[in-house]
Amino acid sequence: MGSAVGRGWAEIGTRRFRVLLLVVLAIAAETRFLGLADRSLWFDEAYSVSVTHGSLLQLLWSVRLFDTHPPLYYSLLKGWTLLFGSGEIAVRSLSAVFGVLTVPLLYGFARRMADREVALAGAALLAGSAFAARAAQEARMYPLLGLLALGSWASLRLALEADRRPIEARSGAEVSEEWDTGRQPRARSWIAYVVTTALMLYTHYFGFLVFASQVLYLAPRLRRDRRTVIATGLALAGVLLLFLPWAPAFVHQAMSGRGWPTFRPSVGPAAVVEMLGLFSFGGELFGAAGYFHVAHLPHWMILVLTLPFLALVGTGLYALRGERAWCLACYWAAPLAAVIAVSQRTNIFYPRYFSFLAPAWALLMAAGVDLVARSLPHLPRLRPLSPRAIAIGVVIAVLAANAPVINGYSWEGNDTYNWRAAAQLVTAEAAPNDYLLYVPGFAQTPFEYYYKGSMERRPLWPVENFLMVRVKMKPDPALGASWVLGLATAHPRLWIVATVPLPNSAYLRLRNLLASGFGGARQWDFHYVYVYELRSLRYKAKAARP
Image 1 (spheres, rainbow, N blue to C red):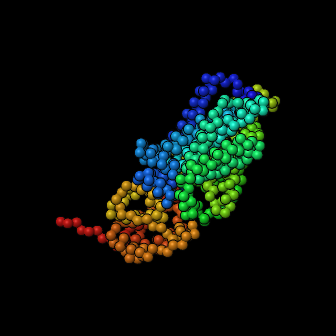
Image 2: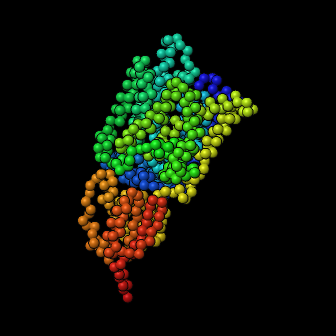
Image 3: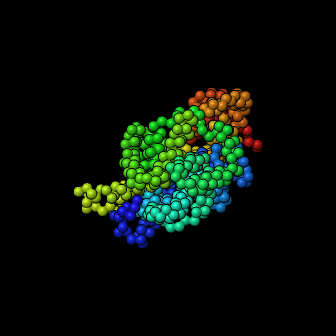
């Protein structure tokens, strides 16, 4: 956008503008830090905390053997917990910090592509994004991925600016306002890109999608600019060289087959619509699919709800046009297209995974808001309104659509996978001589983040769970009638903590096995976390000594 962009905003003085920027940062902090303890940690978060136990060397070894992610986030979380502890607020606040830092970084990135008013609008839309806020309240690596992906794109454009200026100066061409943002040391800019991009790859393997989308963005430029070809080639080689120490672990993880459940069908339009709902208003509204919740609203209606937001994004692409539009299209759409294509064979597509692309979505919407604000006053009925008033009104409307979803995250009914409540129940009801089973075995990790009791316990791994990922296992021969008899004789009650996925056949097989020793079941549902209490039919309490 040239000097004509944002003229309706020109009345805003520098001091007032700074106040508005501080307000935006305050909104970002409020939406990301307020309510960090309102929800129970779910499995992935509890797993993140469990990985930090032990030494750094043990962490790296554990991630290599049992995880499907790189180690950077876990290493940072380990240091964070050493400083602040491993409580809910402590472990989630690291992600909240990353989420807040992304907002001013987006402003700086946008400021080099457009004017400061568009940059401020983009920062405000990201600050109030329910999708970005929800991800920033999880003890997972996606907010860090979003911060580093944005930093990678920003440093890449800085490096390209530094490359372009000498070429234009030699040709005698006037440097366009878009690029006239001050001298950038060329080497420093490319080094920043290499380091930031390498850190991104050490955070999540989706960073390779960002890396590939940047190559796609550079492709038209590389055909006509030999100087950029050399610099880009060296930079890409530098990124891969920095990642090389982890490459053997990456290969081991990829060959292990962990992480992507093969039983999921290929991704379809419904999942894409749900993702658009998350980007637009955080999902959840009127029964739309949410961060975890399935849709209770027809998907065509969810698509209708997203149309105003999609219209702003499309308008933003039109307003930017050319190289800037191509940059943001590669930033947001290319990783999505790659995952959707791969997911036609092996479904790795979960809508919640893509919060790291929220900055690009927010900036595209901001550019669309700016064009709408400058165009609508030409209509006779809207002439009394200034472009500034229209732009502020549209931004507030978008934030208002996201606000109920952000507030709804604190509602108890939204606490999917409520391990905290399940552990509180068992702590209050169980006796030390009861027995505890985890089904499937991974339920132990989130439950024991909260439960500190002394009951004997055992994780069970139904063979049906292995069949879901096409791994054939034989039932444990030790888990038979004699095992049940031993449990029923030694323990007055049996507690079962179960979670999804638990095939119905596995549940029925376990209940039939336990029926010879236990009965009188009570059960509780904590939103995909299930607790069962069974009373022994054979237990006899030892008589107290006189």
